[in-house]
Image 1: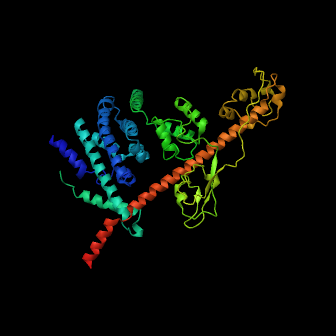
Image 2: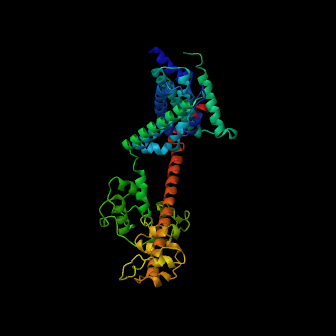
Image 3: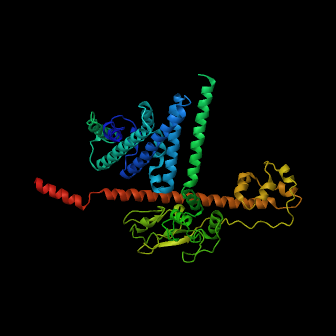
Length: 191
Length: 299
C-alpha cells in the first residue's frame, strides 16, 4: 500500500509528466487558454489516461506476451487509446453537450497526447503490476491536470497584464512554462 | 520471422480492432448522440427571419425547443409550408398556425423614412441580422437585401419612422400544373427524341418533387417542345417543366437567403458574446478603489 502511494505522489510531483518528462506538451499549450475548458480537458484526459494504462496492461499481459508479439506494442496501444478517446467523447457528447462544444477538436486530440502512450509504454518498461500501472496512470493524469489548470489560471491572469512587446504571445507562455518547470525540478530527489 | 508470427500479429490486431469497434458501437447506442443534428435539420427548414415571433430569441433556439417538444406551428413567417415540412421531418401532426404568435404575411422588408430619422441607433441594436447601417446623430438606412422583414426594429423606434413594405421582388408564384387527360404510358418516345439526352418521362414522374427532378437534369431542358410533339398522350410536358423550373428556382433562392440570414445572425451573436466578455474584463469599481488606496499609501 505505501508503495502505491509513493508511486502516485512521485508521478504527480517529482516525475511530473509535463514539467519533468516533457510529455503531453501540446494540449498543455493548446488547451490552456481558458480556465473552464482547461478543467474539462483535464477531466477528460484523466479519464482516458487512467483507463488506458489499465487496458494497455491487460493487452500486454494477456495478448501480446502469450503470442510473443511485443513488437506490435505501439500500434496495439494506439488502437486501444483511440477507442478509449472515442468512448469518452461519446460520453461527454451525450452528458455534457456544452462542454463538448467548448472542447471540440481537443477531445479527439487526446489520442495523440504523447503522455497517454508514454504512460502505457513506461508501464511495460518498468514491468509494473496491474494496480501499480493504474496508480502510475492516475498519478500522471493528476499531475497533467494540475499543471494544465495551473497554467490556464496563470494565462488568464496574464492576459490582463501588460507584457513587453517582444515577449507577447507564445514567448511569454514559453517563459512561464519554463519557470513552472524549474519549480517542479525542485522536487527532484524526493520520494 | 516466420509466417505464423505475421499471421498471429495480423489476427491479433484485427481482433483488437473489431472488439473495440464493437464496444464503441454498443456504447454509442447506449449514449445516443445528442439531438444537435436534428436541431440543425429543423433549423434549416425554418425561414431564418430571426423575428422571435415564436417567443424564442431566434430560429436556432426555436429549432432546439421544437426538438425538445415545443409545438411546430409557431412560425408565422414560415406559414403553412414550413409547418407541413416540419411535420414531415418530425412525423408530427400538421396543425394550423398559432394565431397568438402572429399571422402569415407575404415577404416584407423594412424601410426607414430617412427625413424623419433622428439617428438614435436603437433600431441598429434591435436588428438580429445587422441589416441597418448608420451612426449616432446620423440618418440610418436598411439594406433591403439583408433585411428579413422580422419587424423587430419597429418597437424601439422613438419617432415611428420605419415602414414595413411588401417586398417588390418579381412575383414568381408558379402557375398550377397544366391539366391533361391521358396518363403517361411510359412509351419512352420522348426520351428517344430529347436533343439534350434527358428523360422527360422521368422528369414528369417527379413533377411534385422538383429536387429529384433537378438531380435528373431538369435545368438542362431547353424547352424545345419536341417531347410535346411526340407524346402519344399529348401531355404538355414543356409547360410542366417550365413550372417545375420556376418553383425550383424559387426554392433555391429562398434557401440561399435563409442561409445568408442565418450566417449574419450567427456573426452578430458571436460579436455580442465577445463584446460582453470585453466589458466584463474592464477594471471595475473594486479595482479603482484598490488603486486609490494604493496611491494614498504611496503618496
